[in-house]
Each structure stands twice: as C-alpha cells, then as structure tokens.
Length: 256
Image (cartoon, rainbow, N blue to C red):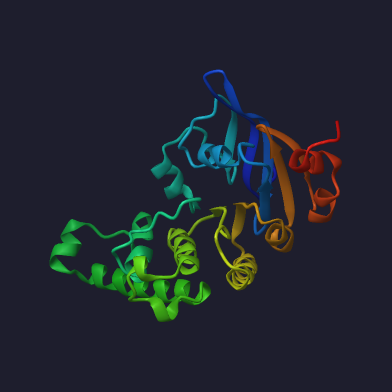
C-alpha cells in the first residue's frame, strides 16, 4: 500500500438484509488531494461515508487510514485517529456561539483533566490559550471571524454550513469528509466555498466530498469517483467523467 495514500477503501460491500447499498467499492485518496464522490440519489454515497466513519461496519472489505486498518472501529475511535465529517443535514449546537461550536470540536485533542479544570492549572491555562488561537485561525480560514460570538442558530444558512466545516477542522483531521457542503447555498456562497476548499488544499488537507452541484464538483476536485446503485461505475479526472457514457446514462438514462 502506497505510503502517500491517506485513505484506502478496499473491496467494500455493505448489505442491509437483501439490499446491497455498496458493492465492491475501491477508492484511494492521496495526501492533499480533493476527491469527489458523485452519483444519483440512492447511489450509496452517504453509506460510503458511514462505512468510512464507523457508523456501519462493512459486510465485506477493508478501510485503511494512513496504512492502518480502521475497519469497523467505533466512530469516536475513528475521529480520534483523524477522520472528521460534516453532514448532509446541518448538526450544529444551535444555541451555542460560533466559537463554542468550534471549541467542542477540539475535545478529541485536549490533554487536560478534571483536576486541571477545577483548579485552573497552568496546563489548563496554556491549553485554553492554544485553543483560542486555533479558533481564530479556523475562523479566518472560513471567513467567519466577525461572527465569533454569534449564536449558531442566528447565522444565515450558508454560514451555518461553513461553521460545520470549521468544527470539523477543529479536530485536526488527516481526512475531511464533506457531505454535500454546497447544498442550499446561493451562487455567491458556493463560489466562496470553492475558494475555501482550494485554500484547505493548499494547506495540505485531504478531502473527500459528496456533492450534487456538478459545476462545484468540476471546479474543486482533482479526481471524481462515480457510484450508481452501489456500484463504482467510473473514476477519473473531471473532464473524463463529464464525457463518460456510463456516467451520462446513470444521470440521464438511455434511449429505449
């Protein structure tokens, strides 16, 4: 297995009773790459995310992160090892501030304990200072600095989407999974999100994203994998994918 592969999904099949949601899916992502996963509704995209993040243990196959087999491990273990995700439906702590939502994302990387918190030890003060600095950095990346103390529920929809990404970044992920990050965004918000993802790539973040907005996908992804009815029907560069007959057929159907 190549050392520069952040994620390898090897022969993954996921069955639910008589339904096969994924069938022998094989993907790999290089460090610093943005890989898109597309396909019609019901193609198995979110199921793939759920297998990678430990919500489902695959019926067959393996998942490797930096060469380590993480197949079937609990979601909190996988998050601790360096995979973070956003969700298709926004899942923020809506009555907390932007800052607090990001700080909650840092809990997997904290080293202080209850004693430190009660007595406000030097270690706790130093960690708090580091966390505040990191929050500032993340807010800057996502263009949310002026909303640091706003209640999450008061933010416009597009900013709530960005806050979910900010909270995922707070876990210091090796791999960032974005589930339809542009869903519901207007054109200006989507263009800003393109810039943000390009900025993250320049910072050497590795990203796997699901998205239905094809213009967005073609603009940000280095490579694209296509699923249809749980099967992997294509993989390649954006220009190759948009001209692929099997992909066109999956989206538009074929003439009878």
